[in-house]
Image (cartoon, rainbow, N blue to C red):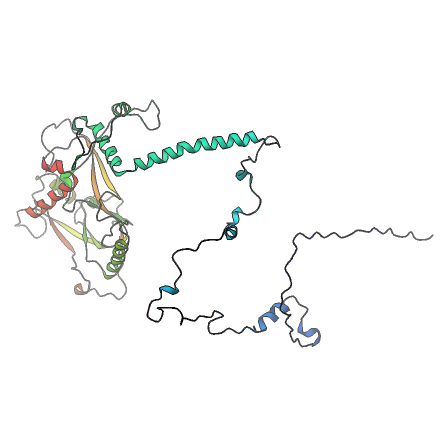
Length: 449
């Protein structure tokens, strides 16, 4: 039986050329390389042979001293006299030719136009987009642009410094209607903005910002400064320890501890000068503060804490005298050095005590003692939220002694102290004057009264 011939199926190979190279061949003739014919030992049939050959062949490019750019400064006026402005790039940009604008288009704008730019939505119900739909869209877009332009004009007027000042004064007029100034503007007196009836009702009947009607105002506190508590510098300093200074979780001695500032080290001085130069170059930045090292002192005995607190609240402190000063009329409290600390992070502004951080304490007047001033205060604290300016917030950590560092007191750069004898006394006239000046910067009317 004869074998059946196999069926031959003809299949054409179709190759679609999507990208054609229409560039003409380079005018330079090809470079002929002398390759030694040593058979297959040279591995010239491998894929990496061509790459290795390209690295081994030197480039026949002769670069002159000017790297192909002929520079002749003889004809340029003023160059040899020291005037090099003629060879600089011009500050005025040349006019761009209209034919070159298409070359500067960003890559995102190239290609087919998107449906967003054509005004046609990507998700549409039908395939037919009438001209009326696009017309309505254009009219709606034009209608939405008009209020934006008017709102922008209003924002410009609202940002005027005088209008901002009037708005601030208006808030005080709402809170204190009896002190409202209604005269003409002049000097330090500026008339506040007009108060609407809705703003008066909102002040008399405050509501929660969420708008929930069941949330009612229980108590309100006026925000006022505590002038009698201001120190000589006019602001407080906040210290945060990176780790617990003592072994106890809640050591009562920390509430009456003493932090002693040491001399500024050379490293901190260099860092401070760098921050000072940055501030002088850009005055919008906060004014830097010196970076100090500190020492922490705590009472030697835990029983002294209550006596120290009573001494600061009134003149009725303990009459016992500790240490070696038995003949002193005033009590002295013995403080022992715990360890030294260095600054890790410091924030604040030396010229503005309120830009970074403030402390607020809520105080409610005691009805049991309606008369008299508590403690050493000249006036009784009223029910209010008292704020205290903070000049800086400092995070400190325990300082470790460097290896090989001398322990001699004269080599430390500051006086080594192991024990402090702390005595509470009345401020002298110089300290009182500094406190009055600090009060004057906060509230002029309170000081004058």
